[in-house]
Image: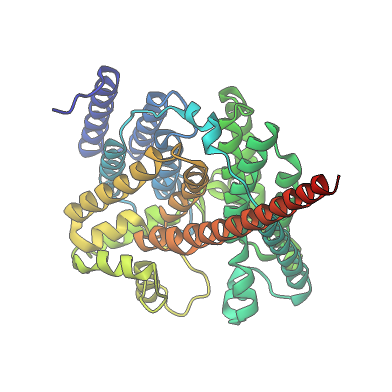
Length: 445
C-alpha cells in the first residue's frame, strides 16, 4: 500500500481546490481581467506550495507556463493591433487544465538536495573536455565576429540564407550551455567556490552571438541555468530573486527594442506600451497558436501515432514536427517562425482528451528528471539544462523535448563520459610510470 505524506496530501488538496475555484471562475465569467488574474493567482499558489524553491517544477514551470498562457489575453486586453487570433475564454480553461494535470503528476513533494554534497557524486572532467569547451568558445566568438560582418539582419534572414555554416554555428550555444552546466558543477564541487571565470567567459560568448543574431534564447538559457545553479549552492536567495525580477523584466523589454541593433543598426521605436513589449513575440506565441487551433476547431487533426512520430523525430530530421506542420499550414512562405504550443499539440491530437493525455506525458517526463537530479552529478547537470528545454518547448511541441534530450543532453554526456574515461586512463598510465621509476630508483640505491 502506497503511503502519502500528510504534508504532500494537504498541498495536493490546496492545489486541487485552487484549480476548481479558478476553473469555475473562467467558466462563469466573461471578464478577461478575471481570467488573467485567475491564472496568475493559481501560478502564485503553486509557487508558494513549493516554498519558492527555484529548483522545484512548481516554481519554474508554473511561472513560465503562466507567462506563456496569459500572453494573448493580456495583449487583447491592452488593445494590441498586432494580434493573430481573437481571444476566447476556452483558451484559459484548457491551459489551466493542462497546468493543473502537469503539476499534479509532478507532485509537490520535494527531494533532499543535500545528497549532492556527498563525495561519491564528484565529477572529474578531464583535459579533453576542457579543450572541447575552449574550442566551442572560440567557435562561438568567431561566429559572432562573422555575423557582425555578414550584413544579415537578424535570425530570420540568417535562417533564410540557408547557410550550413551559420546553421551549424547556431547549434554550438546549445551544446556549449550543456557543457557549461557540467563545468560549473565540477568547479564548484572541486573548489567549493563560485566558478566566476567560467560563468563570465561563457556569458560573454553567448551574449556575443545573441546580439549579432537576435536569437535571445541562447542568453536566456544561460541565465536560467546560472540562476538555478546559484540558488542550489545557496548564493542566490529568495529575496534576491524578488529584487532581480523587475530588472529581468526591464532587460526583456529592452532586448525587444534593441534586438537587431548590433546586426542592422536599427532600433525598434514602436510606440507600444511596456506590457506589449514584454509579452509580444516571446510570451505571446504559445497562447496565440493554441487559440488559433481552438478557433479553427482543429481537434483530431492528428491521431495517436503523432506520439510515435515525436519519439522517432529525436533520432532523425526527416520527420516533420507539429510546429513545422502548423507553420506550413498558417504561415507558409514567411521568414518569421511562430513556433507552436505543446498544449496545442495535445489539442490537435485529440481535443480536450488529447490535452489531458499530453499533460500526463509532460508531467511524467518532468517528474522523472526531477526525482533523479540528486542521483549523481550527471543527472544534476541534465536537470539544470532540462529546465531550459521544457521552458522553450512550452511554445513548441513534445518532439522538441525528446529531440533535445537525445541530441543535446545525450550527445554532450556521451562525449564528456568518453573523454573522462580517456583522461583517467592517461592519468593511470602516468601514475604507473612514476611508480615504476621510483621502484627502479630504490633498487639502484
